[in-house]
Image 1: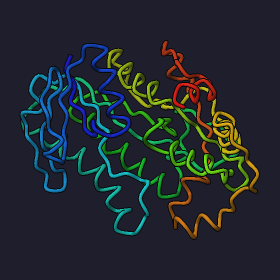
Image 2: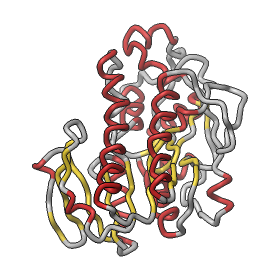
Image 3: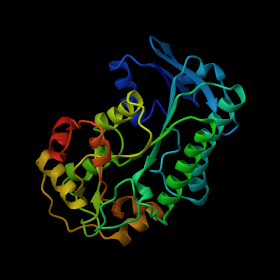
Length: 300
């Protein structure tokens, strides 16, 4: 089997490439940086630029499925122009892929596209599964909803579509966890706001395994890419501090302070989505990291 991956050099992409190697799946990947294009055994890069709708169509040669992760990071300050870049980068990527597949009549058997649990409304009490129809009215909801609709357009070409709604991805070197570790290591860690907001997390290895599992089992539709046991922000902060053997003595950090520091992006720290993973489990998927503490043990 051969897959074409967009965003292959990012946190999630690298974990998926590792899983592909374990499963003897050849990888073609697209990069906007020519310096990141390499060719090794079963791993070959191709240039594209969704902004200008430029792509090396040789990337599709022999490809069975597409794993789409492309999109500008949401962890940069949300200016008006950057918010538009976050949305455009996701939509332009999918529109370019779809237009070439349609024009060149390329036979693709499945599209597996990233989405985000930010599509679910902020709630302390709700427990969201994939059947939930309410969509967050905030910016993250707008991004995820438009992202998923763009992916769904591949159905018009007869291509089965799978969407993975990704939660808080746990990795020791990239993403949110290293940023949470820094103040705790310095002895100034604290939970945010009430600390009661839910954090639906997942170990990067399990998330990558979900992508490959849906590929190999040809699973269509929406699946939540989260571990089975979400935790509150306070419990997450305590678990990290305990693992690092550091005290938590400061009061929780008020929302207004983080709004001053981060602007609109502060919602990443305060929104609450308690998200269910039962649907993927019911298909036979087996998580390696069901609970937070073993995940932290592995990563830290």
